[in-house]
Length: 294
Length: 286
Image 1 (cartoon, one colour):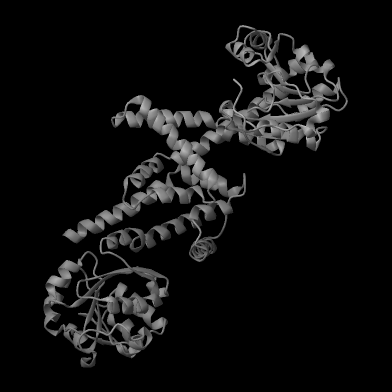
Image 2 (cartoon, rainbow over the protein chains, first blue to last red; image 1 turned 45 degrees about the vertical axis):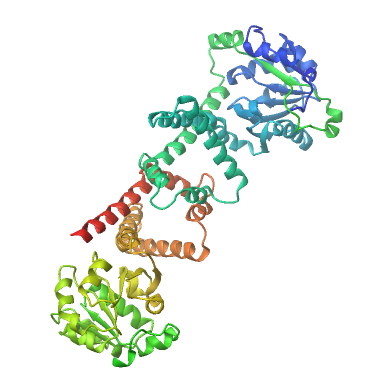
């Protein structure tokens, strides 16, 4: 999105063989195996490890956290208060921001929400918002809504991929080549989503606009309704949200097996941090119109 | 009756026409009674201008009590009235049409309420050029909250359509439609009234289960439906939007709606409308 120069980003991981590592290196991101180095050379710290690992990472980097740092956790189910509690043994007023994003940030169409912690200022929140807004939609919420957001837009892309796979199957069944079916299905959902975002109208009204009396679409919709399509989607969002809360409970009780930790640390731990001088944060101009540098 | 002459002029104010109008009902059953009661309550037509015929007195007593005139002779209805509603049972109609045919003139406006009998059939059994229209009302016409659609035959013009619409608007919503919509209207609104009663009963039962007395629950259920429908009609907003307006995040309503979606209520209702419409079409061909 062009908001940051690559050399201002530092990422760390104990495992240097990950494909993501080489990808980051190609982009010009500074890479290190030392989490401590990352913390020292950064102002805004994104914690992108798996939720059970968070407490251990915080233990490790805690001593190096200074007043200037903004710690942003993207870990599902990990509360601001649990992070603040862990860090307060090292730093009296740690700035913590919790966010929930989703995978389409990769194509700059992410959906991100964030909640600010006790010691994070309005400007800190706005800075994170500016960063995440460069890769999609970003807004502030109360922390207690984040689980619901996880259920909806965190998991949402998976629901969409499932739907698209099935729509493509439908197309193939009716005679379309697979590639074309996938392309058309994806474009249909993209277009519909865009119409909804740009319209004042209720999705119910937009649906009606597509359904000519006695036509093809209303026949198809009847099938969807018969299958309880709507309730399935409601169930999905609910299940994801509830599971997130369960995981949060487990994390709060710190019930993680040492074997799981070890395995995770060796495999897919990655710590990613962009570097920005907090002093000039208010003057940072973010170029959201530039194409990605990679 | 003879003063009507050929072709009702289109420009005469509907109100004045209605006041001079003599209205007849061939058949005096529930639907006819509902329409007549609606017209009377709205003050569109004086009771003395209404004449109804039926084979026996069983149905006619209620009409007389309202001040309408009654007879056992169908021909008399044609002779005395300009606007004639045909409200017999479907299997009886062909015989009745044969009976009244000699008395049908160019001044008459014949409106059939008979389910399943097409304009084509009506026009075939009546003199050529007769002004025929086909009406599908629903029961709440009796409380002036009906939903009615009508279609015109080849002999009926703008004047007749306007007259009928103006007259029947006193009984509720009245719209002209292509004849093909009439069966759909049956499925949606003719039978639809029964779906609403079923829903109201279920709502009340849910309340009873949760501890509310039945009669109170029933009245509240009915008022809830009435109020929601009124908001929909007056606001013109899409029902999906109105639904969303009631749903506070994480609140009672959205929890309840989830139950309804789980039960595929929407599809079931669509199935009902479809079944009734198809049945209406099948019956019409019998």
